[in-house]
Length: 314
Image (cartoon, rainbow, N blue to C red):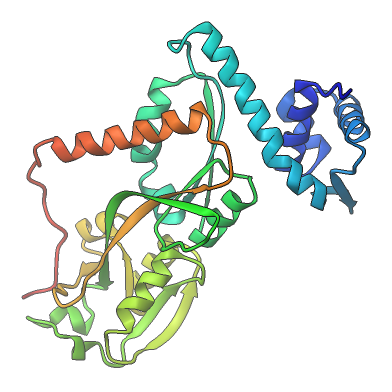
């Protein structure tokens, strides 16, 4: 009969997440020999190697990849059992592993985490920021419990749930020729020099959709962060399509101008992504309820007058 312990499963999941005994031992506050022994005992009981050892790092084997979501579910169920016995009012605790694509992680982290973190002080939140493709891969590989992305996702194993709308804007330096026009049309963008995000980014996908409705231009730079693109536009290297939240301060400081482009639809939806086949426990459920409630409250709250982004003349 198997005698697998809760601690052995914790060790397995931590090593799978961190990729090394040393990092996992630090996270679990165990000595490396103790952690290695627990992992070896688990592999012995299962009769299978859960990891491949390569150049000092541990990589999940095929059997390890199959076992990981089951181990995570068992750990989650045990935590839920404990909370159920203590009563539904017992404080949530544990670790919530979130992923956010760059725009969300860099500019909307308060909206993403604020209410939940304030309400659940005993929950440890680990946030990974990357492009949409990276976050989706993290969810598929069971490295992340839930992700929030700005790009479109179509994958059979991914459950996509809408969160809120976001808007992109086309921005230029204030002295750019396009900023001087009283009224713009699509033809005015012929030959424009564009600075784009990298492949795999939700902003890149949206920009390519926009460019398909404009006359041909030239891609002069591809950069991995909206901040880098913003600085390149300020330097006069080209124009860009960026999230409105990313350029607000630069527009207020009159370092950038947002072009008025009513002929373009620059709206997009931000979404949650979860793995369909994975058990989502109390932490994930509570987190999604928290952000849904915050979003609903924001919609009901009367809108306050705010100074709009400065646009080109027209």
